[in-house]
Amino acid sequence: DTAVSQTPKYLVTQMGNDKSIKCEQNLGHDTMYWYKQDSKKFLKIMFSYNNKELIINETVPNRFSPKSPDKAHLNLHINSLELGDSAVYFCASSQDPGTGGDTQYFGPGTRLTVL
Amino acid sequence: GNSVTQMEGPVTLSEEAFLTINCTYTATGYPSLFWYVQYPGEGLQLLLKATKADDKGSNKGFEATYRKETTSFHLEKGSVQVSDSAVYFCALSNSGYSTLTFGKGTMLLVSP
Image (cartoon, rainbow over all chains, first blue to last red; front, top):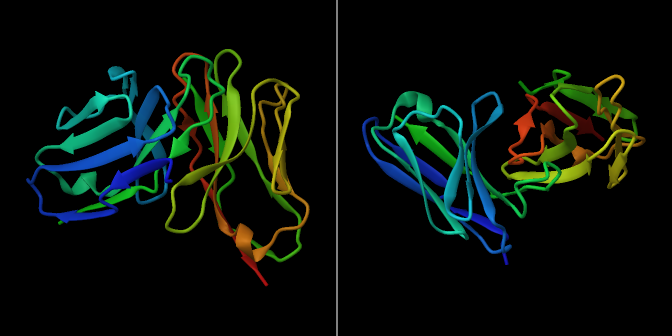
């Protein structure tokens, strides 16, 4: 009964390839997020979706394209992978995007390694 | 813009020692403040939060008080355990779309 799940957990690929990471939440939340955690553990927001609509895009290169087929899923597709894309990517969800005090629930992370 | 500053780690303590991890923030308006914890190999879990000035968040023996006058939200625990070894993140969100701005994280290592 995992609340926020991500697949795959590990992803190793070559530079220039295209890959996708999937995220699903079963909490009934309206808002989902992608965060990137670099090698120094620093976490930064990438995207936020509310009810399948993009509401936040934090100057992420357009090689990254999120897709939300329904409000329980938010996938991340990455084109032309670069070495600097190596990181841990976390999906998260929350109920209400409007109040600022809402708890976000995080998935277990996907460790992407680009060779 | 928003920013969060945490003390650098690692913080190394013996079991039953007192813990303080400092966190200060810069934000417009009245942000909500959070502490998240990341155990090795896992995702982030909410540890505690406070949504207005002078609120105290608490959970699992950890506490933090939202101090608007000093723009701080320091994490404390009276007696740490080996199982508390993890990375602790201070974070804030403003009203709007709840995206979290994180500090750089502080690794806590507790030895028996």
